Image (cartoon, rainbow, N blue to C red; front, side, top):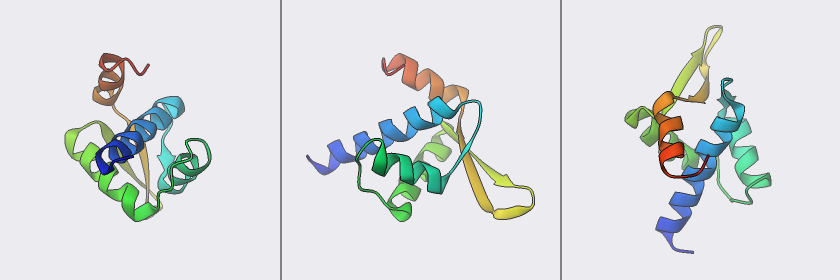
Length: 91
């Protein structure tokens, strides 16, 4: 698998996991765990950060800092993210 294919696989799985959890949000640790166990994608938190940062910048994913623990951030799919998945035929 090429690096580009691996990036696409990680990003698609990330969006699909957030869509499955919608309207709830997920912490990064759960996303990493799902990518490893459900999708069999070997990824760590640092690698995932790059993909999440890209999606947050594009408005596809929303980062939600937790009120009582600001360092703890959860992520949820936005309506733009859902539209992307629909238009690409993934949901």
